[in-house]
Length: 91
Image 1: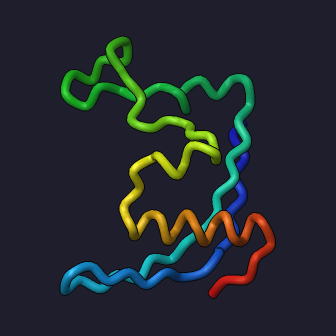
Image 2: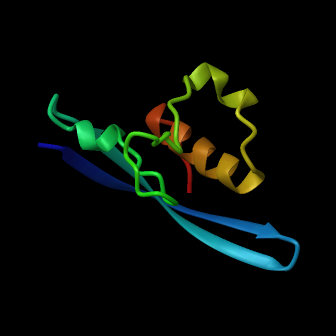
């Protein structure tokens, strides 16, 4: 059975043009069991066909995040998560 643990990390305020966003950031840890095959299946939205499914997500190594093409708002969230993970103080 899948186990999850959630930890609130804080809020990020991001202003883009005339839009002000407040993002509440949580760190979610997911522990999968060997029988959680459904987690890795993405049903094709148009056809509903599982056999033609392709994942809409991918794992990226932390060392490769600089080249991941994150938007500035998402970069702020990432920096908050990494800062908390490394024991650095944040808001």
